Image 1 (tube, one colour):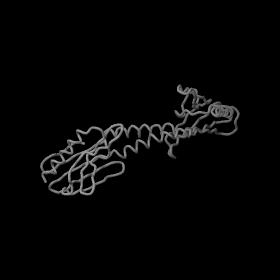
Image 2: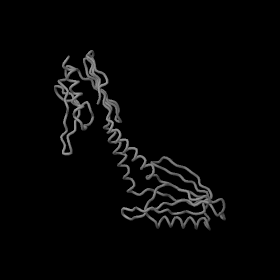
Image 3: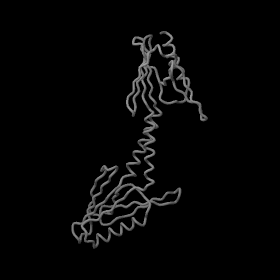
Image 4: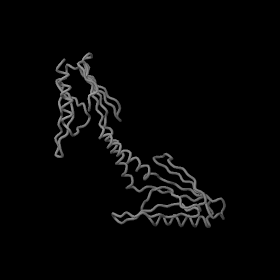
Length: 253
């Protein structure tokens, strides 16, 4: 929180929860990227120009939440390949099916999942179809595992943090005889008008915790207190300074 205007008739304060916003954005963007890259379902449909063709043209379509996010066509596919990735922590392996073309290996997506046997079975079925299959097309789908959906937790955690990261404007106006508190955030805009005569004083609220106390500035009315910051944070000296500035303004009413 910082003071933007200070004179005998007006006192304006502005609060931007910078660290809260940064942490919220980090979680939301990281979670969103993880959702995009790991929770997409990719369907590959390959088509032969003739029954004797030695290669096929494959159309790739990636879908996330019912929306098409990727659509490509790969020509001259003569086989499918299998890439393997090892997790050094628990010594497990995950796999990814790729397209083998005359111009090199082409990725369908970057998602590696468990299940080596079914993927090898898909590769064998493709080779059999390309060699002697009568069907004009061959399709297979690569879907994320159930555990992969846990990445939603990071995204929703970020959104949850951002919901508390509200920008707050506090304006004490002697001519109008009121204090106007406006806040903006993901949940919309809020405005509250409080008569100056109903404000007893400003003070620093303390939230005692075993990990350390945190603080926020608030104003005390006859029947309640109104916080001027959405969340508590460390550092009491700056908040005491702002509470003192408000009390000095109120003492001259």
